[in-house]
Length: 228
Image (cartoon, rainbow, N blue to C red; front, side, top):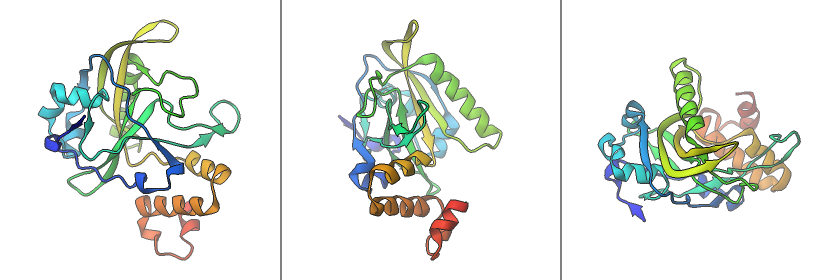
């Protein structure tokens, strides 16, 4: 079900307009009983969102993955890396990008749900997250932001009403986080290894346009991008 944008969602999903090889359209797996634990009110306000709406049951349903905001295009991103001690295919195994929020200042930021269920890149994992680690990420990411260190930021944490099983049984949780984008070095590694040169060029041009538009028209824009 899609919710209205009374909350202030203002999505324009440029990543979803890249070749489909870079992502898979993926909806969050609904949870039993999402409950808001913490909401980053200053961040929500800066994103142009209605705090009262986010604090309501409707907000918990969105953050839990049960409802999809109007204009969102949920997807999981493909990338590669060395996470397991060797170079391998990775991808968002428990995170789903809802879409790109355009803020009142005209900035473009990703809204992502972490712990929102299995994706095509889950590699046997359950796609879920426990409350403790999600609260830890909330605290640490906001501390880094306060110190002036660029990083993802945390918008909200909800509990799911469902357990997750690690060494012990733990309360399940979903973290809503915000980033300038979720482009990674591994996104380029994935394109270089398994996609075409044309797709790699498309990805580079996209990254430059989104993050380094000041060099977009330069003949040597790829070199400038790499240096930056």
